[in-house]
Image (cartoon, rainbow, N blue to C red; front, side, top):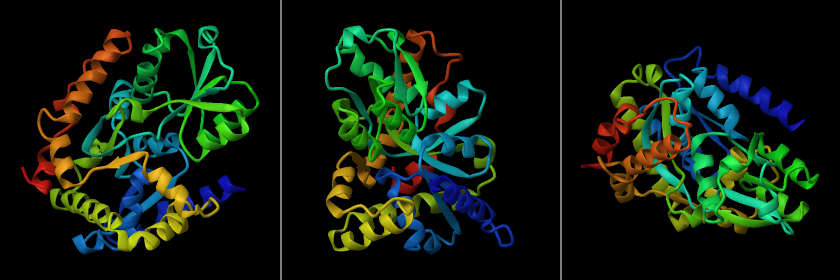
Length: 327
């Protein structure tokens, strides 16, 4: 029933604005790291920039990426390493800006009695079989003198991952809350590692298809970035906390039961959403994002996964975001 409601809502959303002027469509996963996008729409921060922007919060990254690949949306917020994966698949994805990074939101969950040495050759459930998630997994496995190549990756959406973990079909999965918490609670699991153990290992932000991005006026794109920044600043004001929780529950998590404040605080603690100073530092030429993209390519090349050389300068033009935040 939840998926039927979701699909119906998506049809309405995809039709929004067709009889009006230019409506920009943004897709996100319903996760606190990208909550400012929902805030920017609901609080009118994009309207203040003279823009009509609609946001769809989906339950998993797989459909978000499909909307991007099929040009059904203008922009998505997601893991920026996905751009490298899409490029290798032949999709001209590009990075607009890094806006945050996962700092505990991505979780490796194993069975409580698991002997890792006996897991070699078995299937690992993974919510997205793309470079950024594999890169994170490999960091954990390397500390155990193992490699992701010792395992077989099986991609599926988070709810299905949890069900298979509970049914003991997987001994190890990579997921995120709330499904990660359910896997631990109902599947006799334990938290083995999170993205917080490798700071900045999963940078996240705005991306688009190159041909779609080229049709967006620079002024409008700058306005989308400015609306996001305003929403981040608003959401970090303590006086707005109650309203912020209400927006998340009513709009971003609308298909779930309302989350209590303490759970939302816990989820927020697993993300690092950048302020203006951090946006400037991470997105500058030679900054943190460029270093990550170089490291990710080196990892893929070392493991014979890089189908073509992909250079940061080809997939990330930082001129616009640096103009917005000030050089």
